[in-house]
Length: 172
Image 1 (cartoon, rainbow, N blue to C red):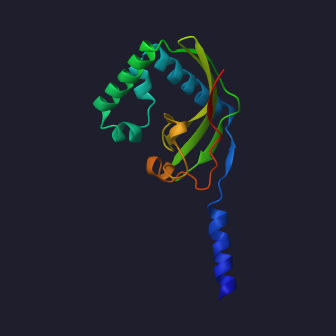
Image 2 (cartoon, rainbow, N blue to C red):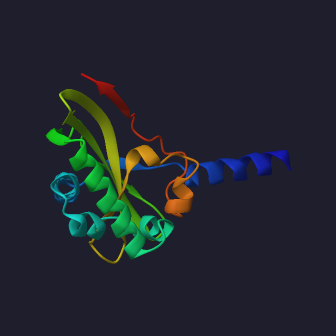
Image 3 (cartoon, rainbow, N blue to C red):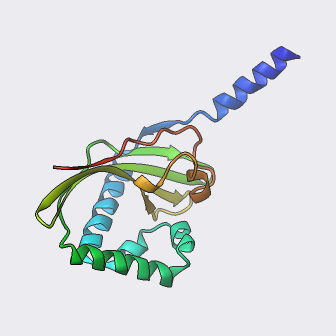
């Protein structure tokens, strides 16, 4: 009986092992292009583009489309008031693709340098993208807000036991 339980436990653990892989070139390139567009649009104040690529769960959690628009507009106004400028955006590692239940996921690592009021800051972060298996439109969540505890709320079916990339922010 104990052997059967151990064997079943091993099968279950094996089935939930995360299979993360470097994305196929076209998917990785699209993920990076999407993220570049989102970040540049945020700093340019293009709320429509930012919302187009914001995952629907995030919009719902903010109280719907109108509330999300107000939140992004307020964030842009604060960035402009503080004269925040995107100095550079790069991709320090290749995107990682994961298959979840009924969705595909992409992790796009980012490294940005932001200038504000004469100070410069470096941010290592990532964007977590999701696409329904049947369509090719990716929507994203800013990575510093995602962790092992809340990812299932945002994305039910996200592979368990995935270790998210490290993040940091530091003054240069």
